Amino acid sequence: MTEDGLAIQRARAGDATAFDLLVRRHQSQLRAFLLRLTGGRHALADDLAQDTFLLAWRKLAQFREDGSFIGWLLRIAWSRYLMEARRRKWEPLADTEAGSVDPRQGHIDRLDLEQALAQVAPVERAALTLCCALGFSHPEAARILDMPLGTLKSHVLRGREKLRMLMLERDVTHD
Image 1 (cartoon, rainbow, N blue to C red):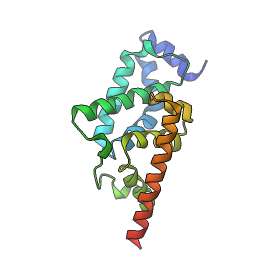
Image 2 (image 1 turned 90 degrees about the vertical axis):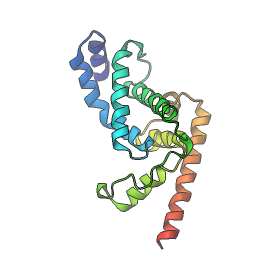
Image 3 (image 1 turned 60 degrees about the vertical axis):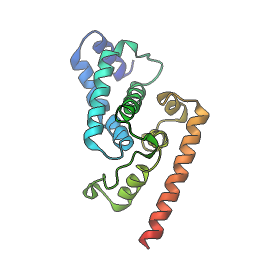
Image 4 (image 1 turned 135 degrees about the vertical axis):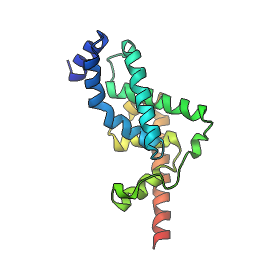
């Protein structure tokens, strides 16, 4: 049994400490996913991460152990993000916030990439983040985002092409 499996069993029996272990083990990956989805809005990503963990605690009995726990969490997070976008009446396909990335956080190229990623449609951003940044396979990412494998692959390809074009535009304007 995996480390997550043992903690899940204990948490299902009501052991909050075991669930806290799962939170600590997966919070940075979950938060990174949400931070990219929200275009760098730290407070919103933190709120959605908290909502995700609260919902996961309440629905832990529904977790089927045929997939990874982090995959299940990311699927909940994706659903929470979409619900929040509808609640706030965002236009999810154009959900960006210019200048939302703090330039003190890293190298300028990384900032340019994060800003470009924030301009990509959320579903493409999610697919790219799962497959390219977090290392999930295409089938795992398709399961997390609840879409057919071919659709997921299309989102990854379209997202990569949009990022490439955005970065080329950046290079042209910075020369």
